[in-house]
Amino acid sequence: DGGITQSPKYLFRKEGQNVTLSCEQNLNHDAMYWYRQDPGQGLRLIYYSQIVNDFQKGDIAEGYSVSREKKESFPLTVTSAQKNPTAFYLCASSRGGEYEAFFGQGTRLTVV
Amino acid sequence: AQKVTQAQTEISVVEKEDVTLDCVYETRDTTYYLFWYKQPPSGELVFLIRRNSFDEQNEISGRYSWNFQKSTSSFNFTITASQVVDSAVYFCALSEAWGAQKLVFGQGTRLTINP
Image (cartoon, rainbow over all chains, first blue to last red; front, side, top):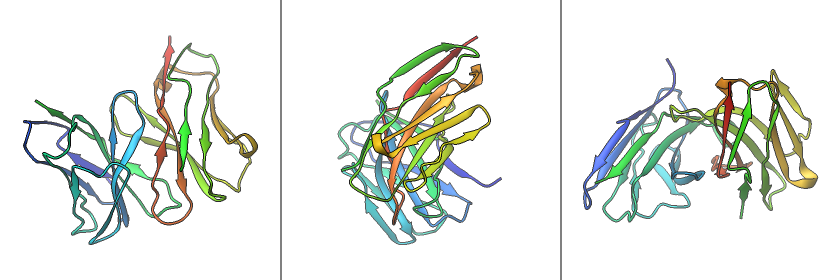
C-alpha cells in the first residue's frame, strides 16, 4: 500500500532529552512536511523539504531539527531546547505545491 | 500574512440534518489554493477538496458541497443529510500557489453527529 508511515504512534520523553520521530513515504513525492497540532488548535508548520538534502524552516522551527538524506525519509528531532514539546506531530508529503498533501497517522509525544 | 479562521469551534447536530462549516481566509496573494481536510479520531488528516483561487465554481461530491466566494473570502463546506460517520474535526487550509505547499490551517471545527 502506498502511503506515509509515522513511528512510533506514542512517545514519552523525559525533560532534557532529545527524541526523533520517524516519517517514511513510498509515494515518490518530492516534498515532505512536519506539522505540530496542539489541543483545540490547527496545525502549524515546523519544517518542510522540497528536495533531498534541502529543507526550510516553517513557522515554529525553534527547538526542532530535521534531515532529508533520502527522498523517502524525513525524520524530525525534538531537542531539549523545545520549551513545550508535548503535542501531536503529523508528517505529510505532496507532489508539489499545487497538489494536495497526504498525511501520516501522527505521533503523540508526551514529556514526563 | 495568511490567516484562516473557522469561527465554529464545535457543532452538534442530529443525524440527517444539513450542516455548514464556515471558513474565512486572509491573503494578499492573487493566486492561492484552499483546502478542506477531515481528521477522524484516528488522527490522520484526510483530504476532501482543493480549490484554485481562479475557480469560483461551487462543487458537489455526493453529500458534500463547497461554496467558494472570493468577494467575501469564504470557502464554506456543507454536509447534506449528515451521518454519524461524518463526526470528525474538519480543517480549512490555505496555501501559496507557487513553491512548497505550506499549509496555513484554521483552528478546526469539531462536528458531532448524534444518532
